[in-house]
Image (cartoon, rainbow, N blue to C red; front, side, top):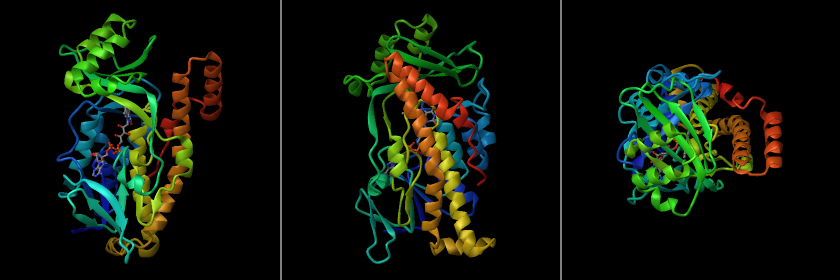
Length: 386
Ligand SMILES: Cc1cc2nc3c(=O)[nH]c(=O)nc-3n(C[C@H](O)[C@H](O)[C@H](O)COP(=O)(O)OP(=O)(O)OC[C@H]3O[C@@H](n4cnc5c(N)ncnc54)[C@H](O)[C@@H]3O)c2cc1C
């Protein structure tokens, strides 16, 4: 049995960002991760707009990460980062021994006497925590325990990959978006040699098999882009096999986010465990970064009410777990409207891509315009100071 204070389940972007945000405010936490090491391999990329950069700056890692990716054209600060770079940078800024690997949480219970959360591990052990923050992604055990609605599956999938141009590409720093008969594609330069692409298309039952073999992913992708320009076909043909991924799209509906009960006792959730969006606005990971800032700030503000400014007193109040529930309620209240707004926008954008009826398309476009104005306005959001 391990006894710990704040336990964060999941060492992805959101879990590590939450640990770092707490650390910057002077609170220790333990991150427990199922994998045996940081998930830094693979070609997952994350598009980060101004809102995400604001959160990364608050965490003190924006400067280092800006050096890893090109500034792309557009009104806002926008870069596409290698997910591994974000994870590595966040982890490198944490105190030693903050992350424990190879710990797979299978359930949460409440201690019958103290009502403190107890995490059940796959190997039969338990971790007695005082506070639990579930950052365990799409299939979150913590979200399930909170009885949040499971994600819904879309009949669409996203294929992602990198293509390396050893002699450099001449694509500038602009994103290209193309629509064909069977698929839509976006192409984004990461630096002067590396290009990231994302193709969205209908999901077929065969994709379950293909998704496990990168050669099959590439070959099936080529079948969907026969009507695309030759340079795009070449890009996909020359993509780095190890970088290819194929995922069926999932999402939480806006009404799930409106009514979801995101706290029970001293347990809450953040990141994909709380909100999965249709990945068309490129905002999911940045929302997780915003969560981390708001959560740490709310916790600190509630503790400040009891302890005042003295750091040792604040640490003591935290150890006694006073005001944690009020802090989590404050965090959930602050996040709910932001999440509702952006999930509605991504939901309507998803419907727009999927419908073939011109009338419905016009209706959806009007609705998006009335509700959200400029499509990129969500990227101007400021989650505030840590
Ligand atoms: C096709 C596609 C394209 C996308 N594009 C973008 C984009 O351009 N921009 C963007 O911002 N986002 C994008 N996303 C989404 C983005 O990848 C996620 O929102 C983000 O990675 C979520 O971070 P997280 O830390 O909340 O969860 P995760 O990254 O899922 O991390 C969860 C961690 O918890 C661990 N874990 C899970 N269960 C347990 C357990 N029981 N016990 C212990 N550990 C556990 C996992 O091993 C993992 O390390 C995209 C997603 C898809 C599918």
